[in-house]
Length: 416
Image (cartoon, rainbow, N blue to C red; front, side):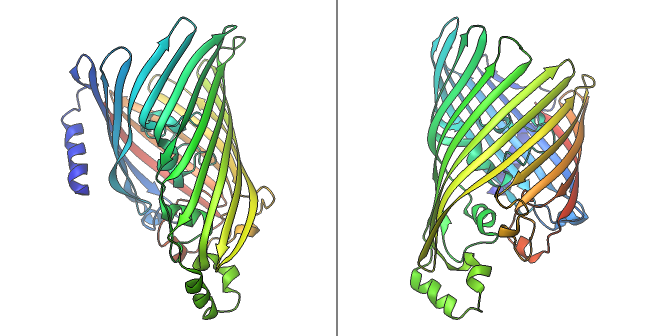
């Protein structure tokens, strides 16, 4: 079924190569894209071991549609197949599917509501991270937009109120959303514990968010933003206390501390993401900076014994883009992320196979060249210290992860 769905997407895109878009009617359009990348990661296994020798198992195929029922009511949706070696298997998923109703539109104020699987405006890049041509490079900044939780953060199943207003020539746009979204339990387990649990999973999680953007009257080339996201995660169907204690009795001394994931009998976490964003455009240059503060209150039960605690993580990046010509652009970015601001060395979260997962620092440089209508090629090189944003996959624990690692990407893209 997966191969058939991917084939339908490929055929649809192939027969549309010479069209900017497919116009089914004056009110209906279909767009799509294909992204095929070659990724070489000689130091660490990036989303799988194949990339150590170079891999073509990195591709995105997307198809989205827009239909206007009336000037006030619109429908939109997108399906996507995304493969990242072993980290994402290419299953076709619904990225978003929504109805958008404009409640009011005046000279200075507008108000609308969206319902369904609604995209989340978090920071500057979350809502456009699914479109290859909209991203500054192969990926969005990992220090802010966690790749492990891409689907969870991209959209929620619920309702979204949005609006804009002009106050004293200052343009303010805002969104307020609430709903639920599924989370990949294995990704969460690797991110939290470093390896899968003996038993247990995470189901849908409630999400609430507020996003505000300001273009000030004194400087139209400046955009400021604030995003707040509250997310609650609870483990379900974990092993019983008796099962965990029985396993502990037969385990080596100290195994509870060395491998806590084997003895988890319950857990929950409440996290608040706060992101400050700023972007300034000057002629052919764009400077973007964002800062993330992540406060988490968690409770974990190991073999029936509960412990609770609070944790503060933070990340930031500074990015410079140069729009050299109509066809070419270049960018460079520096970023950092720390899982625990009280443990910036990462010693408290170190694992035997991955001792540097508690932090990440990295430089990225890259460029795009649109060599024909609807076609562009992208190149990117990333130089990293620490592995907090190294994509996880089942089996990564069988590798010895290095502190310093680089990866290189060459990507061919088509869109219509």
